[in-house]
Image (tube, rainbow, N blue to C red; front, side, top):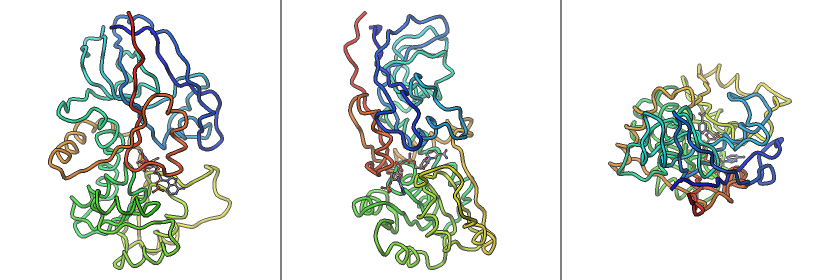
Length: 342
Ligand SMILES: NC(=O)c1ccc[n+]([C@@H]2O[C@H](COP(=O)([O-])OP(=O)(O)OC[C@H]3O[C@@H](n4cnc5c(N)ncnc54)[C@H](OP(=O)(O)O)[C@@H]3O)[C@@H](O)[C@H]2O)c1
C-alpha cells in the first residue's frame, strides 16, 4: 500500500550547544508519487548519534549543517515499499541517510547499502553493523595498529562505539580497560562486553584506579570524549602510543579552549601519535567491514546492546539524552507507522 502521509522531524531552530527537543518539530507532509529512477523506503528504525549535535550546529564541521525547516539528517534502516529504480526492488532492506521521517523518497544516492544479512535483525544495520561498529573496527585497526598484549583504554566504553572497540581489541589479543559513567555501566562493560577492567570516571578515585589498571602504560587510547577523561589518560601513555581521536562527547563548546597546550608534552616525551578519524571517509570499505563484523556477531564473539525508544515522537529529545549518558549501547527509535491508505 502506498502511504499518503509522512510524519517527519524538522529542525526548527539552531541550537548553540546540545540540541534539545525544543529545536525540532514533528510535522506531517503528503507523500508524492514516485518518479522514474526513485524508490520509496519505509523507515523502520532511526539512528540517534552524538554526531547529530555537529550536524545541526553552525560551527565548522565535516558536513554542511542541516538547514532550518529541513528533515533532520539521520541514518535509518528500512524496507523498500515501492521502486521505479533499476537496482532496488520492493522488499529490499536498506540502510542510509534517509532522515528522521516515516518514509523517504530517494534516487538511490542516500542509500549506503542493501542490508543483506537476512538472518540478523535489521536494527543492527544502524549499530554494530552500522556507523558505530564500522567506526570501531576501522579506527581501531587503521590508526590503533594493535599488537597482541597491548593495553587499550577506551572511553564511552558502554556505548555503541566503545563497547565494540573493547571486544574487537580483545579479539586482537589486547588487554582492555573501559572508562564509563556509573557502576551499572561498569558492570555491563565487564559482564556483557568482556572488558578486562572497567572504571567509573565519575568516582572520586578514578585517576588512582586508572593508573593502577595500566601499570605498563597505555599503548592505544581510543578517545570518544576528550576533556577530563583524556586529561586523566594522557599521563599514562606508553612509549609509541597511538591515540585515536574518534569523538569529543565531553566538550561543551567547540570554541578553542582559552588555555593550552595540554597534550604536546605527553606526545613528545613518549614519541606518541594522535590522529583523528572520520568514519564517513571509509564508505568504500563498508561491505568488507560489515561482513567481518557480522561473522563475529554470528559466532557470538561480538555482542551488542540496543536501547530502543518507541515512536518518532521520541526523536526530538533523544540526542540530549545521549549527552546525559542515558543510554547503554546503541540508542535507536523503533517506528510505529500510522495506518497508510491508498
Ligand atoms: N569519528 C567518527 O567517524 C565517529 C563515528 C561514530 C561515533 N563517533 C563518536 O564516538 C563517540 C561515541 O559515539 P556512540 O554513537 O557510540 O555514542 P554512545 O557512546 O552510545 O553514547 C554517548 C555516550 O557518551 C558519554 N558521554 C556523554 N557526555 C559525556 C561527558 N561529558 N563525558 C564523558 N562521557 C560522556 C555517555 O556515556 P557515559 O555514561 O559512559 O558517560 C553516553 O552514553 C561519540 O563521541 C561520537 O561522536 C565518531
